[in-house]
Length: 119
Image (cartoon, rainbow, N blue to C red; front, side, top):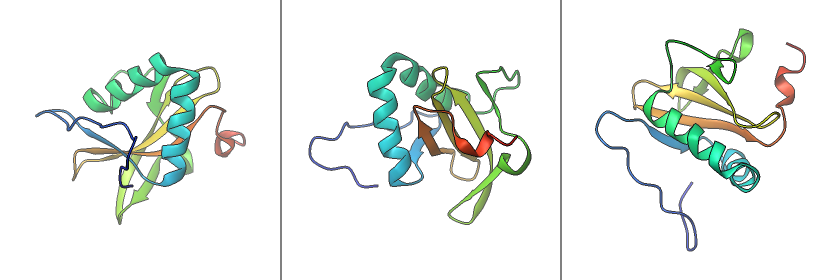
């Protein structure tokens, strides 16, 4: 996704931190909705993805997804998929691309993702 006039400028990742990027336009749009609903929590989630995208001590609010959702593919690379609970219903799902030191946001939603309803 290319930035345009009026878009926020995201800082590049400093040495030792991860890039955080959108996998598609829908995740970018969802991100904007999350920032409007829960700005501070969304910022904290961004910091987590940037500094500790795969924590050794998972929590109920930040953990790897399970089953068929545990992995996803982006640009031909299969990656682990993680979730951060931003609000009671709001979620961010992202792929951890070890080859590129990048977290690809696949879902950013103010509501609970339907894909986990049957799990």
